[in-house]
Image 1 (cartoon, helix red, strand yellow):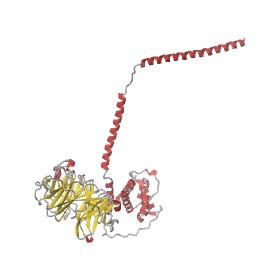
Image 2: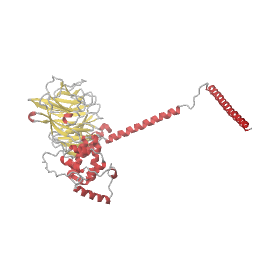
Image 3: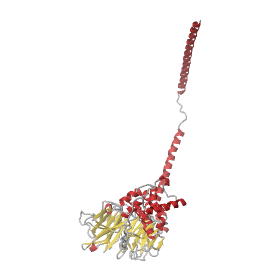
Image 4: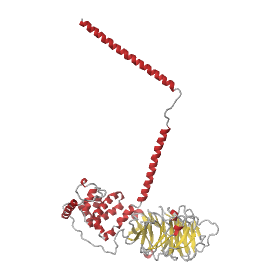
Amino acid sequence: MAGPRACLFAPEELGGLLIRSGGRWKLWKEREAAVELYHNDEKETYTAACWAPPSQAWLVLGCASGRLQCWEASAELLCQAEAFRTLARGAESSVTALAAVAKRGTVFAACAGVPEVLEVGVADGMTRSSFRSGKTGLCGLAATSSDADWLLSASPGAPLKLWRLPAAGAVLTDLKKAKKRFKGPAQSATCLELLCIERHIYALCADGTAQVEFFDADMDSEGENGKQAPATSTRVLSCHERLGDVRLARHKAGGSLGLLAIGYGATILACWTFDAGTHAARTVVPTFTVSKAELGGSVLCARGVKGRDSELCLLVAHGPAARPSFSQVSPPKSKKGAALIDSLAPAGAEPSGKPEKKSVPAPTVLGPAELATRKRLRTEEVAAVKRQKQPIPRSRPETAGSNLSLAPVLRQALRSQDSISLSKTLTLRDRVLMDTSVSELSGVEAFDLLQECAKRLLDKPPDSSVYCAWIQRVLFHHGTFIRSQPALIDALRPVFEACMARCAFYRGLQRLHGRLHGLVVQGRKALEQQVVEKSARAPLLEYVEGDEDMEEAQEDDDERDAQEEDEDELDSGSDEIDFNDADIDDLLDEAD
C-alpha cells in the first residue's frame, strides 16, 4: 500500500476504513460514514499500513523515515520502532510493505533499499529477528497462519518467494532458502495475498495490469533442490481494465468450498469465484464487475462480507477519499443483468440511531422590505460611522457596487432546499454583492450556506474560486458565532477536509513551477548568448580582390557626371542673361 493516498479496510469485526495521505490518517466507520479517529504527524510520511493482530485491533504504520508506529483503537500511540532507520539512509529506508501474523504478535516489515526482512514486536517495538530474502529491496509482503506460519515476499524483477517461518521466538537468521519460488510478474508487484486452506497454500499477485496471477502450493511438498525454474501460475484471473489491489478469501457455495478473489482499480471492481481443487480452465473470467459509473465515484477499497445463507456480498468504498461513500454489492440475478448496489449511509450523514428533529419552517417574507433587516441595517450604518471597517480579502471598493442584496433569495432557497435556485445564486461573481448578502443572514443561515458551498466545492472544481469567496465572507461576518458553538465546529470538519484535499498538491506544484521557471530563464539566456556570439563573430569589413579598380572607375564616372551638371547649369544661366539683355535693348529703343 505505497503511494500518496491509500485505503485499507479494517477487519470485519471493527467495521472501519483506513485512509492515509502524507502524514495524516483517518478511520471511517462503515455504517455511519463518519470519521471515528484522526491523526496528523507533520514529521512523518506514511507509506504502508496493516492491522495486527485482528483480535486486538492494533494499527501498524510504516513511515518514509524507516520507522514503524503502532496505534491502538483509541488513537493512542503504543510504541515507535526505529526499524530500518538504523540500516539505511534517505529514500532507501522507506517502508514498502507490512505483514502481520496474529499468533506471533509481531509484524514483518520490508523496505526499498535493504533486502532484509525485519520481525518487529507490536507491543514493544523491538526487532526480534531478521533474515535476508534476496539481493535487492522488497516491494511486497503477505503472511498467513495454519499449522505453521508462512510469508510471501516480492522483489522487483525477481521471483516470488514463499518462506516457511520457524516457531515464534526462534531466530530467523538461519532461514536462507525459500520453500517455494513462483515466477514473478513482468512489472513490480503492487499487491500480494496469501491464504491457507487445509494442506494447500494459495497466493495472488497483482502488478497494475489487467491480469492477476494465481499460485497453488502444497504444504507437504519438499523444498526446491538445486537451481530449479520458478513455478508458473496455475491460473490467470483476467479483467478488461487495470487492477492495482486484490483480496483473497474463502467462499462456500452449494456445499463446496471455493475461493473468492476481489480485484479493484480506480475505475472498476471485479469478483471471481472458482473451485480451488480443479485446474481445468487456466483463464478465469470475472463472475461480475462493477464500473466507476455504476458506483458514482472512483473505487477506493473493497472486501467481502458475510451474507445470509452464504450469499456472496461485497463492501465497497467509493467516491472522493476526503469524503468516501459505502455500498454493498451483490451479484446480478441473471447472467446479463447488472450487479445489485445497496448504498449505505452517505458521507457526513448523521447516525441512524439518532432520531431526526422535525422543525416547522418559519414563514419567509421575500423582498427588501423586511423590518428586521431594516433595523439591522440602520444599526450597522451607525456603527460604521464610529469605527472604520476592516478590508475584506479580494473585494472591490464600496463605491464600485450597489446596495442590492441576495439575502432573501438565499434564505428562501436554504429553507426550501431549492438546489437549482441556490446554484444559480452562488455562481454570481460580484464580490460586493456577496459581502452585502452574507452580512444580512443570521448565524444559522450563514452556516447552512457554508455547508452548501463546501458540497459544491468538491462537486464542481471549475467554480471553486467563487465558492471559496462565499466561504470567506461567511467566516468573516459570522466566524465569532460559529466559533461559539461546539456542534458547528465539529460539523465544519468536511469543509476542512475538502480544503485540505484541494491543497494537497500545492507544494509539489509550486516546486514544479519553480523548476520550470528556472529552465525558462536558462533557455532565454542561452538564446541571448547565441545572438551575442553571432554578432561578435561577424566581420566588420569583407575584402574582395579587384574592388579598388571598380571604386576608381566609379569615382571617375561621378566626377564626369558632376562636370556635365555644372556645364548644363552655366548654359542655362547664359541663356537667361542674353534674354534679359535683349529685353533691355528693346526697352531702350522704345524709349528713344
